[in-house]
Image (cartoon, rainbow, N blue to C red; front, side, top):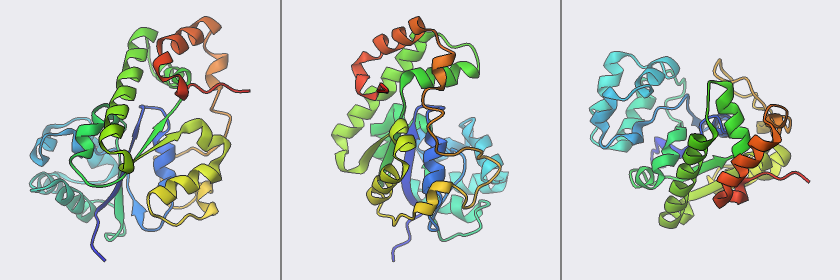
Length: 248
C-alpha cells in the first residue's frame, strides 16, 4: 500500500461546522488530525514559517516545537510537509493519513486544490446561523459579513467547476437532521468504511472538542436575531439561497 500522508481537506465557513465535520471523520481508525494547520495558504512550503496564527496552531494543537517547524518548512513538496508533520507531531500513530481542516481554504479553494491531489469536503451552513456565531465572538456588521459569505461561496463554485469529482458539499443542517445518511455519504466519498458508532464522536476525543451532532444548534440564531436582521441576511445572500435552511 502506498503511503498517503494526507487523505483529505476539510473547509467551510469559520464557525460554520468544520470542527464537527473533522471530528466525525477523525473517528475512523486510519485518519487523524488536529486543529487547522493552513499549509496550503502559502505559495510554497517555506512560506509557512511566517504564517500566523497557523504556526501557533501547529505548536499548540499538534505539539510541534521550533526544530520540528523548521524541519517541516524545509520540505520540497506539499505532501512532504504532511509526511513530516505526521512524523514530528503529537499523533500517537505515525502511519495514519491526515485530514487538514482549515476553514479559510474555502476562500482560495481552486488554488488550494491544485496543490494536492486529494478529495475535499466543504461544509456550509445557513448564513443567519454563521452570522450569529460570529457575532457571539465580537461586533459583526451584516453588510461585511454577507460579503464574506458570498466570496467564500463563489470561490467554492469556481473550485467545483475545476475539480467536480474531488469536491463534496455537505449541509450542516442536513448532517444534524439525518446524521447517519449524511455521514455515510461523506465516508463513501472519502473511500472509507462507516460505522454508525462514529456518530457518538467518542473515539479519540481531546481537549479541543466539546460538541455533538444535534438539531438544537440549527436555529439557535432565531432567538437572538430580529426578524429584520434575519431578512436582511437572507436578502443579501440570495445568490446562494440553496444554502438557506427554511424549516417546514
